[in-house]
Image (cartoon, rainbow, N blue to C red; front, side, top):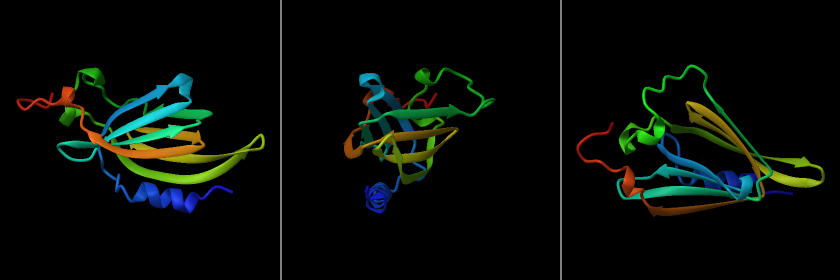
Length: 133
C-alpha cells in the first residue's frame, strides 16, 4: 500500500501554494512529467513525476491569453499552484499515486509511481530586469 500521507507531507514541506509555475513538460512519451515552480529569485523547485501512466491537463476555456506564454518573461507568467492533493488508486493490479493539482488557470492530474523533488538554479533565460512582459 502506498504511503499517501507521507507523500502529501513531502509535497507540503515545500510550501508550494501560490508559487508561480515556470514550466510543465513531459519526457519519454509521458513516462516522466516535470513541473518547475519559482521558489525565490535564484532557485526553482522541480517536481519530477516518474512511472506515469496517465496525465490529464485541462486549461480553463475562455482564460485570456494576451500573448503566447512562451514569449512571457518570468514575472508575467500567469500560472500558480493553488493546491496539490495526493491520493492513491489501483488500476489493473498496479498502485499509483494520484496528484490532483489546481494550477490556476488550469487543472492537472498525474497518475505515477514516484515523485522526486529537487531545488535547482532558476531559469535565467526568463529573467529580464527591464520588463516583465
